[in-house]
Image 1 (cartoon, helix red, strand yellow):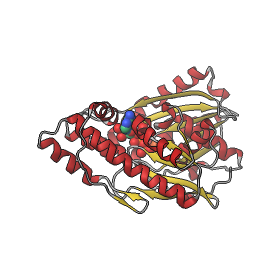
Image 2: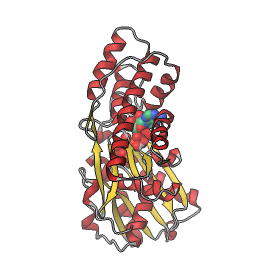
Image 3: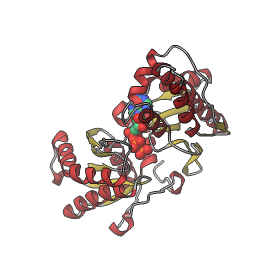
Image 4: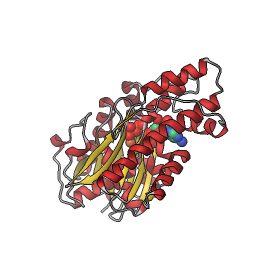
Length: 326
Ligand code: ATP
Ligand code: FE2
């Protein structure tokens, strides 16, 4: 069975194609980069509408397939930005209706876990899901994926991007901050905000901008921000692993592309006799292949949806989904 998955929760419109063994046959995407300032949902949605058909045909071409070879269509039903979600859903419905195919709307956060499980071989991990909009520690317990810890304000990626904007580093600042941090030498203290298994980041932006105004070099600011924020994430991940007794930790989300975060989580895992897993970078960020794979798993476990049941859900919680496929 061949599944086409369409991702469109935020700035990325992705189309991926997988077979029933999670061989990824294609994983194409087009990311919206706002001309200035932050991400405006309506503008991102217009971008997605402009590129969706092209990204989908690029995926078919890359897989060497035609529309007639697709057996199932899935798409990211939420959580995410309403206008963006509706574009991905519309593209998926149009393709499914045109070819009279089954359609399944999937939870984007769970897709990050399932692609990681399928591609890295871990079995029952705690997932540290660190992206722009989301920062959560998720694990499987009693038939559902449950959130054990999360950010109380903004996602870590949004924190990095907002800080990047305030420091004049441009949008999508994560990679730039990572590069700068490698040159940083002096650590400056920043708010370390951990409450139980939750974290908060907004105070860090104010404090980092204050360092900048005092003339602290960007490299040292980037270094201090990474050390502090990633230590917070590592701490809550470790606490969740201890609490629920998981011996594996999986990284997902765009910020999981960061080598320093990977190293810190890996050190923590080894120190407690656990193992860390992280999929290839293209499967950490938002992508269509993970949506396709979760759709395939759900369909295989008997899930069916009618088109009216595919309404998007901006606040779709991870623990609302009954997991029948594991
Ligand atoms: P979601 O919809 O799941 O919240 P998203 O729309 O934020 O995801 P992703 O591609 O998962 O999309 O993540 C993008 C975020 O990852 C951005 O905030 C970006 O700055 C950050 N990022 C990308 N590369 C790196 C890196 N090397 N280091 C740190 N952050 C990074
Ligand atoms: Fe994501």
